[in-house]
Image (cartoon, rainbow, N blue to C red; front, top):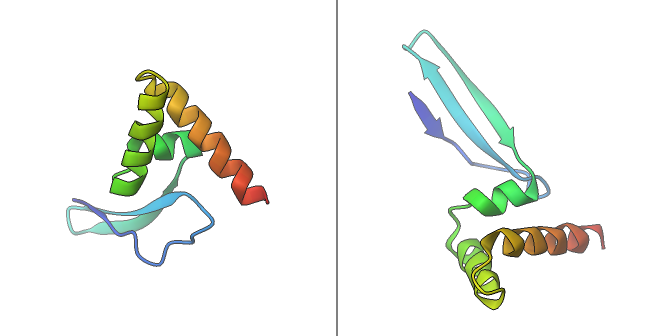
Length: 80
């Protein structure tokens, strides 16, 4: 059994918490951390998905470039 936890996440890190239970005998919570590009690729947050798709539309439908550009912008904004 696998459940998504995602409670009290550190807002400065891109990760999701996942609880994994093995037959009721063993379980653990893991944080899966990914790059900004991976995060934007698989996000389920509606506002983020819309942001990616709007940027892709501006780039003639190029989602890969849209994700790369948005990721760079978000990373650079965090450094400021």
